[in-house]
Image 1 (spheres, rainbow, N blue to C red):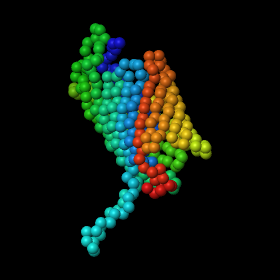
Image 2: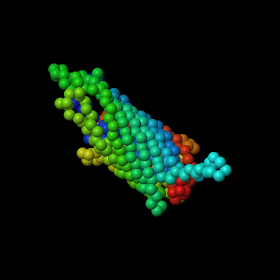
Image 3: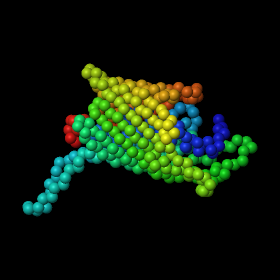
Image 4: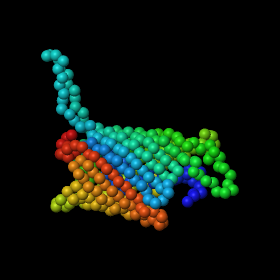
Length: 327
């Protein structure tokens, strides 16, 4: 089916306040909060690697799709190392503080004729406060923004838009993120902001074409995991998302765990979708699947959205938190 669109339509897609147009949407964010908050890097003490693939609105041509790979770790303490260069001379190397976390994230996000491919590097610092932990994280990011102008078809009789003739099909953009994360097991709360500097996208070479800014996005997440004392746990959580234009959206979630090896969850994304999530843990391997059923008119021509997340976590559970071990 031919799509009759104007270049201005794609500019709107690139700069709209709709959350899903500028930042990837994830349904299984509780499996890897690092995707939405840089302060999460290393907060659990694990060394973790995650692969995520998401296809929105299956059955629709040029529907949004996202693929990402992320990794994050805590630089844990090691023993003092003594090296002897002679009988009388010894050199001691101090161990790390155990408070630093690092992470990296590479992604590819496609939405119609618009695409973003990029990555970011994260530094996090964790402070012990009584029996809790406060984490701060910053990320620097760079991505290539692409507009495919070859498949654009102007309405019959329309003159060619000057921006279409001079539009750059690709450009590199840099930006940053900041986050706070506090955990007092089994409670957690986080606040983060992406597109912190609201970097501009310049579509044309001519100075008459104004820059179009990325919108700053804000995320607030909180949750609590209840131990049912019979191998079962239940975790209610909520994620609020908004932009500079205050386009508020909420994901209201509840997940149930059995021995932390199997889980089943449900989520309601306000005005958008109902989500079902299932998953399993096999030793260090975690696999999760989510199906989004759209609650708007798009469900008439779509088979829903699908997301799979695969993760590996290395490290002993007993060293994750200060109240178990001081890293």
